[in-house]
Image 1 (tube, helix red, strand yellow):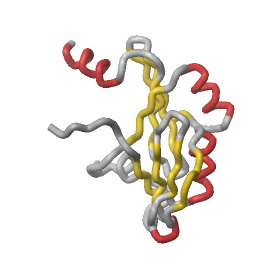
Image 2 (cartoon, rainbow, N blue to C red; image 1 turned 90 degrees about the vertical axis):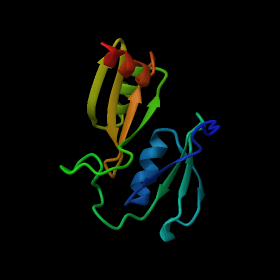
Image 3 (cartoon, rainbow, N blue to C red; image 1 turned 45 degrees about the horizontal axis):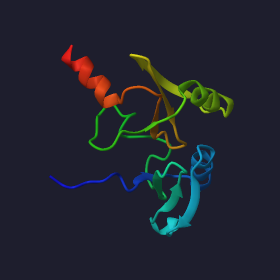
Image 4 (cartoon, helix red, strand yellow; image 1 turned 60 degrees about the horizontal axis):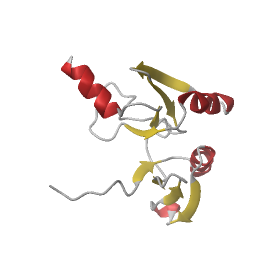
Length: 143
């Protein structure tokens, strides 16, 4: 077994630097470094929670499409990023007030989850307080 502490960062391929930096900035991420975006290196964005995302680009094919979620053929790869939020209702209000469409929602055993998309249709799952999604799925699978 590897002695893993936590995720270090998440890389997300993007097609429009300005739109993506503005979107993630709205969510609270700060652009702290440009590692050479125009040459395919990351824009490093850091959230006060400690979550680090690397926006990579520029995408050269299917801009604004998410082949992992939106295609009929199901490709292998990471389909979404899920983050826990402190308050589900406040999160939904923030998302709505800022004109970000909610593309899906779930509620199970009191845990409310909404799904949103970034400018390239990458999916972010915003999970409210309550048991972890892993725990909820495990309990559901056990019957």
